[in-house]
Amino acid sequence: MDRAQFHIRDLHVRFRTQAGELHAVKGVSLSVARGETLAIVGESGSGKSQTMLAALGLIASNGVVTGSATLSGQELIGASERVLNTIRGATVTMIFQEPMTSLDPLFTIGQQIIAVIRRHRKLSQSEARAEAVALLERVRIPDAANRLAAYPHEMSGGQRQRVMIAMALANRPDVLVADEPTTALDVTIQSEILALLAELQRDMGMAIVFITHDLGVVRRIANRVAVMRYGEIVESGPVRQVFDAPRHAYTRALLEAEPGGTKAAVAADAPVLLAAEQVRVHYAIRSGFFGRAKRVIRAVDGVSLTLRRGETLGVVGESGSGKSTLGRAIVKLAPASGMIRFEDRALVPLSRAEMRPLRRSLQMVFQDPYGSLSPRMTVGEIITEGLLVHEPALSAAARDRRAAEALEEVQLDAALRNRFPHEFSGGQRQRIAIARSMILKPQLVILDEPTSALDRSIQKAIVDLLRDLQKRHDLAYLFISHDLAVVRAMADKILVMKDGLVVEQGPRDELIRHPREDYTQRLLAAATQTGFLAG
Image 1 (cartoon, rainbow, N blue to C red):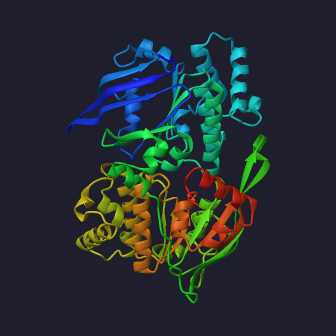
Image 2: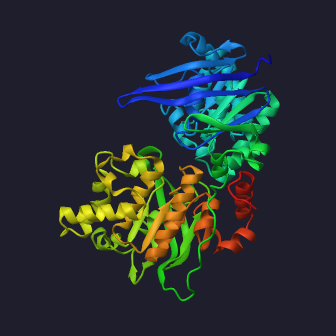
Image 3: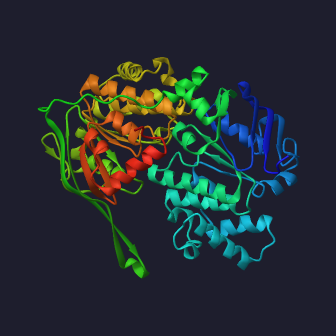
């Protein structure tokens, strides 16, 4: 048997819960060979991550695992913690979707990489440090020797993911398990990370198990794919075979889940609802003794735009481009200079009290609905919170009726309004966040990455919902995203940002088909390579 082969046979995972037993993984069998990439795909809750966590002995304490998982002939199911600790981090390693939760904020990245190296290899501190520098250079972290002293929060999302890859490869594993390692990254950074993993795999000959819900990524990197649903593998085989001739209805549904269609154009004489000229958001950062040294961060630097009633402006760019700050500045959640005019009101000079009546017309929906929904309030209370401010004369019964209507409008059961946010899925929570905005009957909604954390099929449903609400209520959207497939499905016009500046803007089709600027061309090329944007 090839020493780098990883076999899973008839794996079952059950969790003991207050509501009874949850059978999360049901008889899964998989294998991956040296130098091969196996992708495990499926929507959230399909069991794909639990399969690999169980195989590596990382399951939650209320979980029970049966079946077999062998690595280089070594049985992992039922192995002692001592045995597993010698294998994990050396023979097999795992990287996760969000490196910020995996890296310890109290230690520098150098300390964390060196600890991993010395845990499994008999190297001195200086030898381990030299190895850590070499690893950071290999994953293309600039100025690697000096970056060892950086803390996780001092690095970008893409750099933190590269650090996690460096740690995972520190002891030259036979198998690398990558659990959604690129989902939260911009398309350009995602493309770089995927290319890096492929290069490292060629150099080291390791096997990769790549867990994802993104079929575009699978098409680019994997040799074989296993499709999971409700804890079972419904289809598996070579990627081309499964994608070109899917046998199972669920596989076909996943392949068809790309947000499709385009938005109907607004009338040329539609009134301008929002106009902004030379908007700037600058932050002064003081450092040094007594905070005397000052550095200015130009988060948004002279952005101008117009948005008509019923129109959608897509704002795209990498993390740190300033697109979210621009959205917050428009609704006065970030201090800005320049001119921002909503209908006939100049917003920049308005005080907080003067802005309050306008907030019902200017709403914002955020990327992470779980973080923006209070866990201590019921869904009904969350949705109607704005009514307490803007329609205080409404009775409790009237507010409850409005909550029911708002939930029905976003295609959720009104009977669920007395439940709490944690009782809903990610897609349902995003519908709740949208209902909270829509209950106030706004004219303009800022949508800040509202679909980026969702599975592709749920993204498609949210896009369809947003387009339906826009048509029904003649809404204007400022749609902020790094996902060009979603932007193409939603927008009339696209504005591209980089480092706080507008790189270019124009009609959707013209900009996608004939981008003028190198940066826009790179964004579109990366989106095509990673499967976000079909040709």
